[in-house]
Image (cartoon, rainbow, N blue to C red; front, side):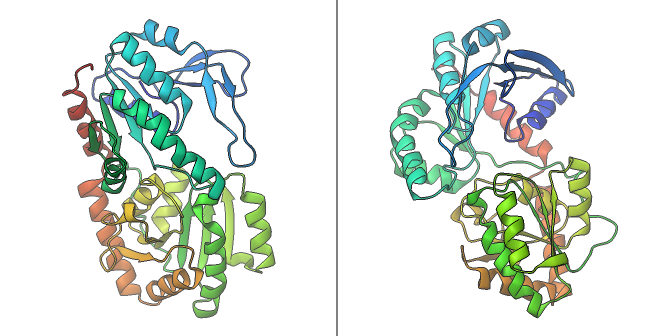
Length: 360
């Protein structure tokens, strides 16, 4: 049982594809009443909730009503709660213990960087509330060794396993032809993505590689400011905002681009990075510890200093001006996606982990 977030719907479909049953419990958001529906074979229960807002950093932080009753009705063999940062996950832990149901909690990035005050509040939450609740879970899954090591250093006394995100390597695959100067970014336009540094990097890159173009896919609260910034920087056709797109369209664009850029300030293991990898893109990403080993400088991409537009532009320029290296990085990235991060492989790892669980 998984909430409808963080790619959980796709995960639920894959669990069903293995012969198991899966149901998603999530928030009804703007709907005034609870709703039950089936989408792509996945039953989804959307519960009413009270939303806690702390603008502008926190817009959606719901407490769900009726979760205990929903879980009792479903009588699942296991609960999986996605992300430690949301109240429904804490609710699920409490209910799982009371109903004696095994529960797995996935950590998809320890915090979402939103500025010093909100970041400090998140860390305070982790070392108090999470430290009290997570040990009550039967298993905590981290996406990277970095996150697991941080929890261990903070004294978390819980069972932790590292299972990365996965990618559908049949849907996300290289196109028949690659645009040697097309750079892509995919994601949600929020502060922790570091997109202002990417736009400034594109200004510098234009002087070195005028053929270069950046396509940005996704939406979010920073979209208006980023569009305005791109206009002020006079990027013109060198930067195109495509907004939110379906999986098929995203895979086509990633399949035709040659480089993928990730200037983030904070991440877990972003699915967009794995999708770009699977589509045979060379990878240029911030040198976050959690990406060490995911992006290997000199093999499938380049890690650059965070918040450094000049370093980002230099890394992009070196790749776009060395087409042989660009193609080699892309081929290596595709092979790694198939060998390490294929969705089939990752789902099997989860099922193996589930099979070992016993109730606390």
